[in-house]
Image (tube, rainbow, N blue to C red; front, side):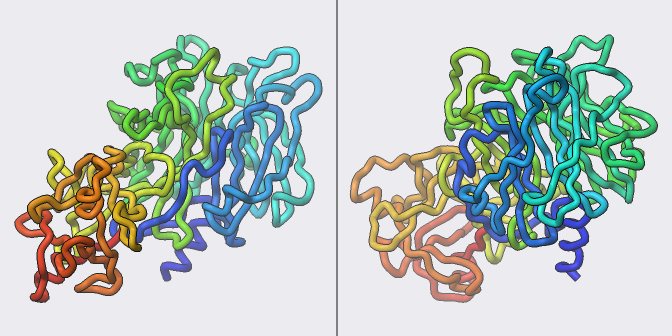
Length: 472
């Protein structure tokens, strides 16, 4: 049944449904692709992931595919369409998205004119080939909305059997760069019909830095709710993600059905060296059990000149986690390199290893997600060991001191290296889990006791359970 649900969800153009909690860890390396902004990745029923994104020259639409998400990093890239040399669709080719609708492929994108590059409007391409890297793309023209104004970032989703279009546009009479809108799709997936609902007007401080912007809407549906993320502020380090949510059974064209988060859900992080995360999409892991956040950012804060002329936005991936109340927890943009994991206690099944005031402990409902995320890296002491590096404090590692566990900055010493290195073993209480045996005190394992982590010998079944963790 689970496999059937995955196939049906993918066929509907949605990320495949998986459990909100206890999904296995994923393993990706960031950045996925350099100089690719506004990334959009979909997993299709043919077993391939398809990725398109904005190229820094703003002159064409590219597409690549691979059977794994990491495989997209080295997959051959095909140019499927080039800008016109005059008139419409001749400049600023931005933010393509690829969707499979009614057994055809569609690409939504924004473009300006050669004689007016800022006359940005939304356009659609269609391809009837099974493999969208082949066959021909037909221009289906411009998406018509109630106003002939600056518009971009069209995306589409299905809820309760109804297909919707969501997009960003400058509305006459509102002094913003762009708001986010929603409408039903018409008979063709390049037409809208009926009521157009304004969902987001940028008003908060974090939505209006540099420019008053709400753009790049993307939808994920889980746990009886619909979550719509959008990007806000200028496309420099101020860029960030906001979010709306609505009940899956609500009238989505009623603006009052949506609630807006008062704070950004994903923003720049100086500790991890990630700036301006935004224009996201959602996909699923290869096993269909984890939701994956796809986005772009830069690995530096300061930009010379117009950010739109800076080519170095990179496509990145990281796991999207879910809170106990069914809402998404985006955490922070993780450091470059291997993606982190969480370690869930085997016997306290809703509790995770986390640090608080640098003391390592196990707790449920860790709101500050990054406190419970660690990168499993080559052990500082070598010898086939591993070390656990903090996500929100890069350079800090899980180490024992006086047989208690802390998260502390490496001082480069052999003592620290030994204290922070562990032999990764099959779980002492379950082979599907992991147990961490001290490198410099063999026979002692990381275990929890009274909510804190210690390095201790384990003999009883209860102790073995407290020394076993599951990677998520």
